[in-house]
Image (cartoon, rainbow, N blue to C red):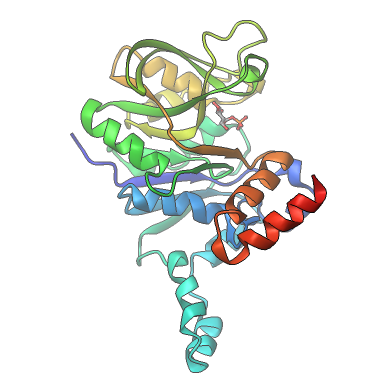
Length: 289
Ligand code: G1P
């Protein structure tokens, strides 16, 4: 079984729900406590053994490239002033030379199209996809690491899922579960954004994927699905039955940072885990509620 060495981060979206903040700043650069969203996704990929980070970007997303570049002025200034603890904070923004690649999605044709834009950089090997606005939080066992362990046992394709409320299923890719063994279930079918009352289950795909390269040929057909977009879920649905396909119920917290309320909740939840600020944040919340 080929190891998963590469990850795709689709980051071309406009971040409409966060306008005007995202007029000049990519939504992936919005901070949760003190780190931008994209950093959480990259850290998660690293923890799962991913070596090559592929960012599918768009216009006005330069900040992401700059963020993962070295910042000579800041670094030399901090070094000259012996501010090593601040310098250490930049460590996680460093990707090894040649291990970050950026490719543009010229048209916003959907998640499937974004993933297909990275096909030449991925080549003929399995790969991961991480949607950075889904902040999946389990520092001890990050989501993609849990999935990589499932992949090592089952091979094929693995998606992370979580149960959502019945009235929320229309927002997600939903899987039709088959035989289940602990947190791992076989995928029988998948449907993107099912109409109310038609979802095959409440198991929603939460933005983490391990996929086989055969998906690219399916994506390149450019077939439109929900919302008139080229949907990753539709292409995955076609792989079911031709390759092993499993859904792993993620063990951890999920914060939907593509949503204003979810983003604020992520900030509160993660702030409460930081010893240096937890007490003052907690005390402030108590004054409110
Ligand atoms: C995308 C996927 C969907 C998935 C969701 C998770 O939808 O198409 O299958 O459930 O991310 O956040 P989007 O949120 O881009 O509409």
